[in-house]
Image (tube, rainbow, N blue to C red):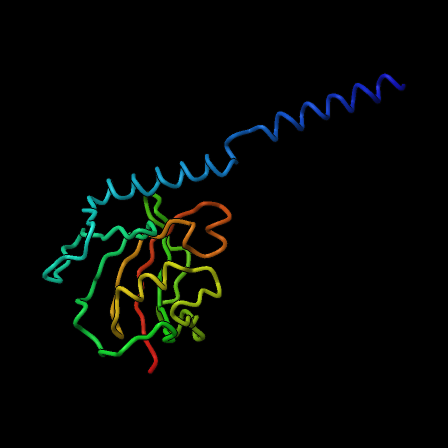
Length: 180
C-alpha cells in the first residue's frame, strides 16, 4: 500500500509538472498571440500606420497614428469640430464608446454609446488612471475637443483590467465630452 501511495504521488507530481510547463498560457505566448491578432487586423482592414498626425489635419479613412504606448488612433470627426475647451492635466471627461473584438468577423463586446446603453457613463480625470484604462487618457489628449470622435485599437497593456489579464486587444469607437 505504501508503494501504491508513493506511485500515486510521483504520478501526480509528473502530471502537475507537465501541465504547468505548458507554454500556451505563458505571458510571452499570450503577448505574441495578441501582437499577431493586431497585425492581422491591420492587414485585413488595409490600415495605413502613421508615425505622426497628418500635417493638414485631414485623416484618410484608414489612417491610424501609432503612439509610443502602442495605441492606434484614427480621428473620425475633424479635430477642429466641437466645443473648444482648454483641457488641463486634471480635466474631467466622459467617454461614450463601443468595444469590439479584433476577430474576423468583429463582435461588439460592450456598448456605452448612448444613455439608453449606459445611463451612468464612466468619468475620467485626465492623467489620473483610476480603472486602468490608459488608452482613454491617451485618446482624450489627442481628441482635445468636446464631441470629438475617434477609433482606437488598444493593446491589453493599456486597456481595461480584464483585457490585461487575458492579453486581449480591443477596438473602441469613442466620443468624448469634457466638463468645464
